[in-house]
Length: 150
Image (cartoon, rainbow, N blue to C red):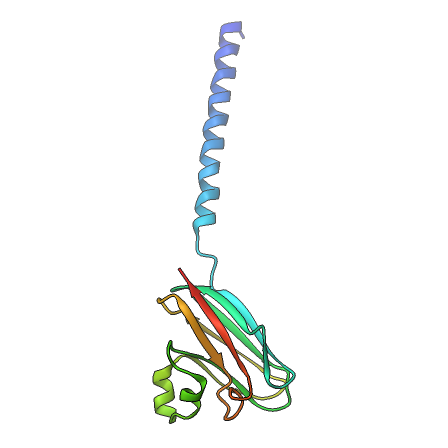
C-alpha cells in the first residue's frame, strides 16, 4: 500500500472511531433519562406504637411504593392524610368520611406481617401526616410526616 493510501486509511479509521464514540455517548444519556421506577420506602412498626422511619420525602407526582412491615404483636395500619386533616379528624370520622381525608390507606396489617402499596405522590408540595388509623394508635403518637417536594 502506498504511503498516501495508508494515511487516508488511518484518517478514515480515526474519523469512524470518533463517530462511533459520539454515537455511544448518546445512548448513555438516553438511558439515564429513562424513568427509574417508583421510589421505594419500607416503614416498620417498632416498639408497638412507632413508625421507623417517621419521615419520608418524595417528589410531587412521583410513583411511590411503600412496604409496611408490622413487627409488633397487634394489628396496625398506615394512612396518609390530606393537607389540613389532623389525626384527631381522621380517627373521629366515619369510614366514608375517612376515605375523603386520605391520600393513601393501607388497611390493618397483623403483627408479623407486611403489606405493599404503590401510589402517586400528591401534586401539591407540602407536609402530609401519616398515621396508624387503628383507634387510639395515632393519638398515642403513631404518626409521621411525608414531605412532598417539587
